[in-house]
Length: 242
Ligand code: 3SL
Ligand code: MG
Image (cartoon, rainbow, N blue to C red):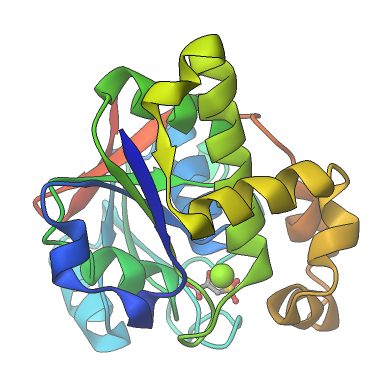
């Protein structure tokens, strides 16, 4: 099993995804929202690229469709929810369909559609994703959404955590895993920074979140393994797989 990492939605190359299991990470905050909404009973999440596209889709079934997302971190006019995972409570999303558009996260998913399989990961379901990957035994590419096409420390340390969990699962057998240089570096960064907050607080997007007073979101998004579901993206929709 080979493990590789792509550092931003703009760095995705189709040939790198061919026949691979792709794991999308936008820990701040799109994939944390997706995992939370589905864990709280949302029927499915439909990620779309554009705001207008999301609004048109929502119009088709106003009773059941909810709109969520952001641009530049701010809730969109006419949308039900912002891109705070804390908005997506059981009461708010149970039995509903969430249509989502975000600056980087939904774009990373759409840009990865040529992969064999697409899973959605965050820190809150990191261990569950590692278990799923270990069971699949296929080559993996972590796609870090990044921020506006740039490398993001927050996504990178999250993928380092998942790689470390995979190694723990494999135990002495972890020689069957081969890591690219960047995958080794991601794991190294995680292991060298067990206090994730003091590492990610230097990240530009973390600072932006603080500026917008999203401190509770930061705490929530960097708490490990509070959720044990793994969403999969298929035919334009995210659902939970067992
Ligand atoms: O870029 C994205 O997809 C968002 O998750 C960014 S934000 O955290 O909502 O600002
Ligand atoms: Mg992000």
